[in-house]
Amino acid sequence: MTEPSYAHGTGATALLGDTVGRNLDRAIEAFPDREALVDVPSGRRWTYAAFGAAVDELARALMASGVAQGDRVGIWAVNCPEWVLVQYATARIGAVMVTINPAYRAHELEYVLRQAGISLLVASLAHRTSDYRALVDEVRANCPALHAVHYIGDRTWDELIASAASVSAGQLAVREAGLSCDDPINIQYTSGTTGFPKGATLSHHNILNNGYFVGELVAYTEQDRICLPVPFYHCFGMVMGNLGATSHGACIVIPAAAFEPAAVLAAVQQERCTSLYGVPTMFIAELNLPGFAAYDLSSLRTGIMAGSPCPVEVMKRVVAEMHMDEVSICYGMTETSPVSTQTRRDDDLERRTGTVGRVMPHIEVKVVDPVTGVTLERGASGELCTRGYSVMLGYWEQPERTAEVIDAGRWMHTGDLAVMREDGYVQIIGRIKDMIIRGGENVYPREVEEFLYRHPKIADVQVVGVADERYGEEILACVIPADPADPPTLEDVRTFCHEQLAHYKIPRLLQVMEAFPMTVSGKVRKIELRDDYARRGA
Image (cartoon, rainbow, N blue to C red):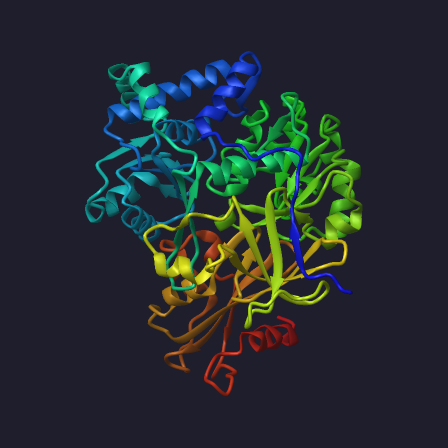
């Protein structure tokens, strides 16, 4: 008899019942003199004892600023030590940290500030071409809940830290004692098919356990040093990275504010890192860097690759040339904290490149018929669903949207088409709702389409993902011009998007059409748009 496409992850280690703060205390007590955090660009270092003191100081400062349990604190910054301090300080006081993508422009920032009701924002001063202070000033009048903004590296940050003196350690302890591991701790915004992002709300229990078990499967100990070039505003950085490290007494190493392949390799060499994270495009950039062979990467043993499938030849080079014999592949989504399946340390090359691993401990996964919801036999393709401690509390103040993805049995419907093999390993073969994954960033076509409808030269638009060697997928905008004699150019479209959309959402390709292929029921056949573009050899 064929087995059903269902798997339940068992494990000898029980789930953690801690809050993030209590779990950090365990690491501080066990490893006070070991390094917890290293910022390579600035040369700053913290032992676990010093890191705990810095977290407590910021926690008391936030309390002095009036942040109450359950209040939303936004963090809009590039990777830096202050980002990590905000993550753990908000956890200490029961505030809900809202992570904001550094690439966001004004209208995206305003939406998140308003939808989450952010009362205090910590921000970088600038990132690439973005002047964060100017962007905040542009939208602040429309965000009535926002009463304080502190910029990292600015006097406003120093003033915030100085305010900690007015709150005692005892007051902080009382606050922390009243917290539950099931309290919400984090809101992460994911692009939505409705045109606006949805705030996945995650608890201490969600993210602490997920970070911990990801670390368990790559055998982290206090001896490990984890190089994190992936952004902290993603679960990849703040959960699989930061919480994966601190729950094992390991060290977080920040190679640069944003991804730079040379900085990553230099950090691994200088800090003798044992683990390296990245999406496949990051590893490709590192391997192809001129002078790659000159870096001493012999300290590496493991790491995590996620975001999109890894080409076989790239995986071979990562194992052979980067010494990452135990590198792990993870699959998940923000709504599941994020990881649901992961390859194991001793998995062969085929499993690491042909699958996204098998179910994590204490999590269930199944593959169902997308229409009937019935669990399919192994080997059949259907929608991947997951259930367990990792499933989010819900979308922030959007119960209807939550009900669309979490059913009555608390199964999270991922929207991904998958196959569970006879050996229990899962293959992702497509996406039901046409989500585009460009270089590890999730892009929902509807959000980009809604924005492009505003362009005066565009009468209708459909956005699809097309295959791309470098990014996995690129964004193609198929448009019907308002005036066939004066169609928009790609430059027109990109310029229109430049100041309004995050860079990874901006179409890189354009196809002007007279009409879209339609189904009999009047829906656009997006698969034909992709096929047509491929046939043209564009």
